[in-house]
Image (cartoon, rainbow, N blue to C red):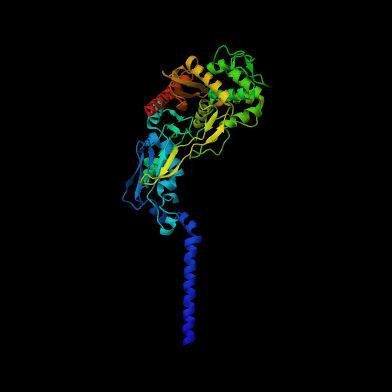
Length: 491
């Protein structure tokens, strides 16, 4: 009898070991795949079992949570959803997360290990902390001014603090309310279909994810390249550029909207936006020199994050001389995001250096204890300080006496550049109106803000849309708010 008992005990022990090994396999080896399995409903139930952390603008949350009473209990809500959608994105139980909701999901959902009171706390307790908060760099008055200025027109506005890289405003228009996508069911699916089928593409983040021909605003980049390369040594001297200007290797004549561009100086060309002078300077610098210069500004960078990913701004590395001439005035295949062009203005304002742009100031626990803070860092040196000083002077003159007079602000030094970018088959489409600028209070040591505005106004006639007329007033309103905030901060 005893041998049988021993065999039975051994079998039971073997079965117990097998059970423990299988449990360990499921919990350790297969845990990741099981958690990622769409059929595993427990993950979704646990994810929405408690409120999500908040996204904060100017000290106030612009998000919230609502108890739906359903199995997926807590749904995301948004205060002033369309105003802040270009930075928050959406958090949907059906369609996932985008923008800050996606980039900072671990903090907001409470799964970030940094939120735990002790290292490995979540692993040991098999729990998670209340959702943390994400404090943004955006200032509400600038965001609201930009949103009002676009007034539902297709376009975007980006404002940055040149010295730090903080993004002070990020607006894309037309926008949408991300709250309509938060839950589940037919209503959410209908909203998703309606938003994605709209010809105005309200879910497209035009500030970060859409690229446009930058038109004449790109002439600031070409001017920096020419000055740094020594192609221009005196900004007031004639450039020996003919008008009419024939594109190299072709019979195509490049026109000017401005008068007096024949043999004009770089200063005159920036002030009145001469195509011929800037195209000629781009050819003089040469393809290799232009590519090197534009990439110092961030063009062709596929790795920029703020923390959401940013579309690549393009400048071709291979092209003919006639194509180079067109690219040097922001046409041909040259494209840029509004963020990129705000960085161009910021480079001029910040003595040639571009600070790494960022949207998240810090993350905190639900109780407000700082978990992580973004530290100011340098992104690129776009030009020498001497070149930046010259371009500051030329951009100020363009606002005071040239094409950008609609951006003048009493009591402040404002530098700007207009742009009217051709596009469409044979350049027959309604041009995009651009304006890039920076502003510095007369009693301040450094510029308070750099801004880029693009307006796609499909309803305006070609003769009515321009950077100075359509985009500059919006930039002015945003810069005025930045200067006012700076003045209040100084007391």
